[in-house]
Length: 390
Image 1: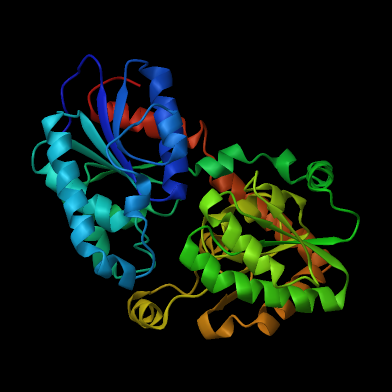
Image 2: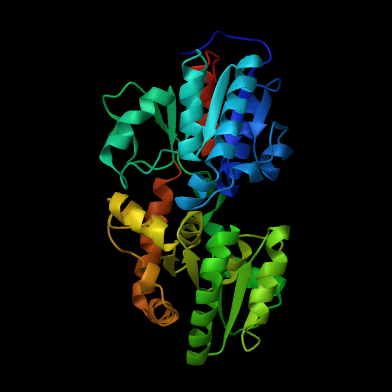
């Protein structure tokens, strides 16, 4: 339940992966703008640490992927869960914000809510994709749910949880000018690229994703290169992954691949089209107006379990937002180098249809940036919950 107005607002906050670190940092910055005295404690990455987070544990300790990995690491994750619960209660935080990382954070929120701490969950679980009963579990954990997409609050209508559609921070951050030809030209110059076609390769940021997706994307790149001389850009901002990525690329000496270790988005800004692992990068590509082919692979057991649970026909965010297939999706055994290259070459050869695709991307982009920035709207909702005016 909402707490009293207090001096020196104390917020507990946990993010478990890079996308959550970005969201959490934006929210922290917006809260500081309105309440300079606010303090933050919990778990986050470099962006949240840069906003003043006092870290209780490194974010890497929460890094898991798929379905099997969390089970193997369950004892460690439970130990972290109960340690955080103990610390947040001892420090008497005024509110706890779980940023995405749904299973872990919703469990932690439930434990804290039972002790009277106001709880916020930032990013709705994909209840439109998974079992429908999952939405009914959210009120047990969260007093306030901040959603990124406009269709999500309807799934919680009539439930005992306040919802606020705040939009997606990336949709506000990426402007129309960021996708322009002038910006593309500048990005290519910064990367030392010439006038040949440019394709971005985004296999993911987690080690397991890179090991699963990068070889397939690079094999597809060979086939794209055989169609027409092409330059490829592969972003890798994780220092601990850079040597792994370099070793993978070294095995494809016939390809012109630039590894961008400085800017995550520059590959998409510079490209004509992209091969993208399902996730936030598909939203970035959409907001920049870049044609794409979306793919994903899991281990066999994780994929079999996902097939039994998933209830949505789409995994790519542009397709989910549009309610139809705007961009091709190739998953698991269908994600072969030949299928990926064929699909991307078709995307790039669509001519006038590309113009229509970019117009649809623009409409969806606008739908994700209502009024103020997402971080400001999220901060307003959090302050209202804890009893402080925004």
